[in-house]
Length: 137
Figure: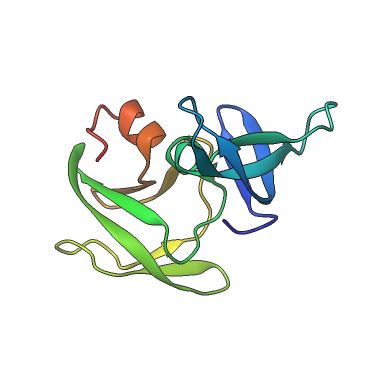
């Protein structure tokens, strides 16, 4: 996980401060993420399992390796990955039909990236899939 990267969870904005390990419910050591709420009066840090963090928190800006969900006419079409990052845009590994392969980097708190004609683009994780009633795999 990239240090200082910003993420959204519900209405809050969080910043990654590092990685660590924590014990899961079965007392096994797992990879975890340390993060802080950048707008809260509480200045302590939080720790969450890395996999859970990646599946629930929404990055504020797209980076190489992020997964993007493509929707057309309200229906899930597929998932692709960010492979290149420019100043204001990112390039996708592949696209579908006439959907653009270049997207804006900015992501809103609901995981929405942009729309082009009938093509919609969202971060692909558990949170965004659940909001759109799409099975997350």
